Length: 307
Picture 1 (spheres, one colour):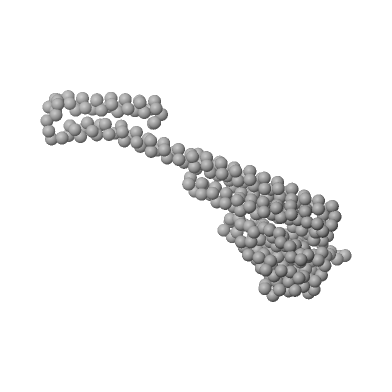
Picture 2: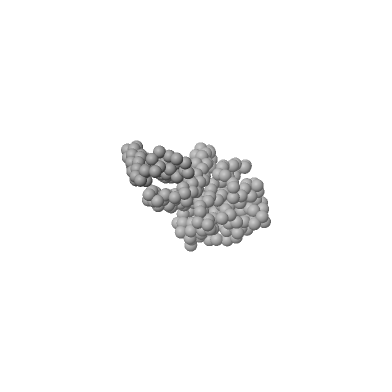
C-alpha cells in the first residue's frame, strides 16, 4: 500500500499515488510489484533498489542513481517469538520528496503517522530527521531492554546454570546485530552530510550532524552493554568450570580415602594364611589402623584445601 502525505492549511492530507507530486512524503508499506513499478515510472527510480528494500537480509548502504539518493538502513523489531531482529527500511531523496519503502514496520510508521507527521513540515530533510530520531529511540529502547534482561541474569550468580550462559550468548548475538546495523548506518549519515547539494542550508546539515552524533552515542552504549554481556559470560563460564573441578577433586579425594580400607580388608579377606590372622584382636587392629590412615589423609587433604 502506498500513501501520499501532503501538508495543507488544515493539517495533513493523505491520498493514493496518482502523480509525481513534490514536497510530499510517500510511504510504501509492503508494496506490490505493480505499486513499485508505479513509483519507478512516476519518479524515475531504480526498480532493483526498491526490490532490495523488501529483502530481509539487505544491509545499510547509500546509493546514488541520477539525482536520486537511496538510503538503506535497518530498524529493530521485536519478533513474534519475543526475540529482536532488524529489518530493512529504504529512504529515497528525489525531486524535493522523501519516499520510504518498508516491508515489516507497520507499528513504527503507524506511531509516526499518528504522533509526529502533523507537527513537522513536509520536507525531505524534516521527515528524514524525524524518522531517524524515532529509529534511534527504538534502538535505544531495545538496547535498554536487553541490558535489563542481562542484569537479571547477573543477579543469579550463585545459581548460574548452563541455560543462563546460552541466554547470554543469545543476547550477545542480538546486540551484535544491532551494533553492526548502527555502525553501518553511521557511515551512511556521515556520507550524507558530505554530499554537496543534497542539503541546501546550514540548518539542514546541522540536523543530519545531530543524528550522526546521536547514533554515535548509541554505538558507544551498545558496545558497553555488549562488553558487559561478554564479561559476564566469561565469568560465569569460569565459575561453572571451577565448580566442576571442585566436584571432581572432592570425588577423587573421597575415592583415595575409601580405597585404603578397601585394600586392607580385601587382603585379610583372602583364603590364605596372613600375619596375625588367628589373633582375636586382628579385627580391632585393622579397624583402628584403617581409621588412623583415613583420618591422616583427611587432615592432609583439608590442609591442602582439597576437601
